[in-house]
Length: 68
Image (tube, rainbow, N blue to C red; front, side, top):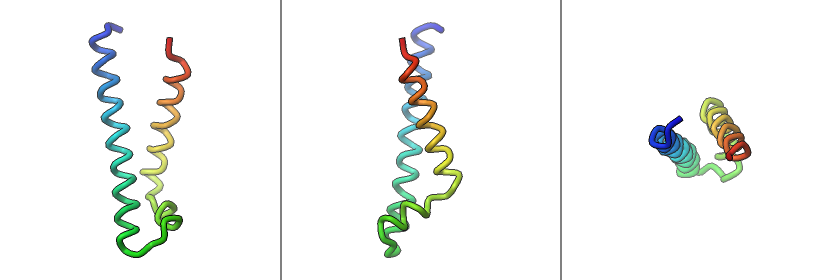
């Protein structure tokens, strides 16, 4: 893969990771503003968001371990 294409893919991947983190942080903050304790707010994240977060982390970790 050419370097310019790889660079664009990596930038898009980083943007996806940042957006996912911000979405999870927003959901936790929203739950905490309604008076939930931190522990309960962390467990109230939707399963889709939690699953996508785990998937993105695992793919990023695999890419990190297999870098040249």
